[in-house]
Length: 494
Image 1 (tube, rainbow, N blue to C red):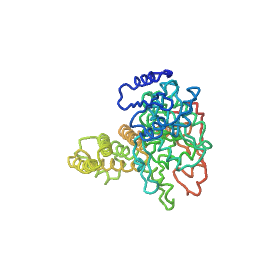
Image 2 (cartoon, one colour):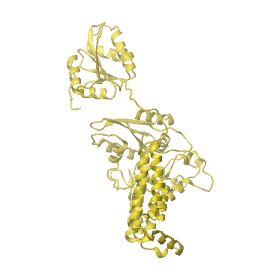
Image 3 (cartoon, rainbow, N blue to C red):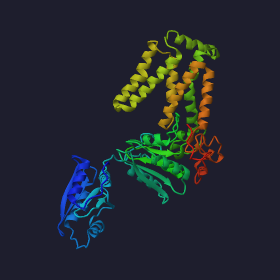
Image 4 (cartoon, helix red, strand yellow):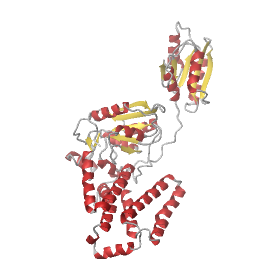
């Protein structure tokens, strides 16, 4: 707010000033009343639709108008009496600034102004309209809690409190965004959290200079502003059980009001392959699903590039029967293999995007049309070779096993880089890009924690819950020991 004035003892002046701040907004309500027993004018102000109307009527208006007030020597004594004995809401604060009074109204509070008193009372009556707790959409599981976050950060924090009943849990909430004044809450466990990471996060939040904060990505962009990497340096999830588990490991959770996704810091590469089911199913048998995800992700990165390299430079390395089949199927295709694979990859991404954003019944039609009819028609028209379609489709299926959407986007970007490398230099280009990728991953830091931890540097203690997960009995009551190689006052490397 641009206004920054001290309230007057004149009731009419205060009401007029607040009217000026809010203009002719139809939802700004002013109810002028009289404290009958002492014949003193007062006013109750609130913004309709974001307050609990019943609470305003029952716990503020009725007590103010019907209470029999004793005689006080000063107006300050009267205001304190109203605060302590008359208004019956759970939280009341005194406001001595018109700018802060306007902010309180915008937060769903109700202001009480009394004639002759230059301070206001702000009563808690907030009631935001929000959806009920539903199933998580970002990370679905076959077994485990079916509860997801909502757009209300207070509800989300309560979901974590329900899981972690620990007096050491701390929550600090501040408003950010010059125009939106969005509530952003930082949650951690006092005796477990890494104090250096917490300090760095708080410092970067304090430096936040944005006109609006509408989603968690606004905050993620500020906290990881030095990074130019494809790889996400913060975990983004809509599952309370995931956030609770990360907080119990000493991480910091950041809640942004207005979004059902919560940020977790620091984050390491292996975290993006973990799912809640890893801990909800018995880890027995020969198949380790987490290791399989890890393996399939890297296979999906290389398959298109290797295929392009074979068809462009190294066809002589293929078995004769396979080579003859590939060549015969590509005989009338007018495009190069690299252009073909790139175009198909873009089409698959377009089909996936449209399926995500269209209505469900239309999305099914688009998926069937794009995945079956369009693909078959392209092959019959000899616009693409069948092996190219198989390679791109297989790549999409393999990368879809990654539980975190952010890493899937990263995988698509890296896949196209390998396609370009294979088209330019063949296997040499792929090998060179692989070296660059490895060096880049080794250089990444998430708030001082090496991105490839616990593999590089090797932390044997944490390997029990990395690519290969040991049984829960070997991990319970065990603290992670992520090793930081540098002080956090240095900028995170990109």
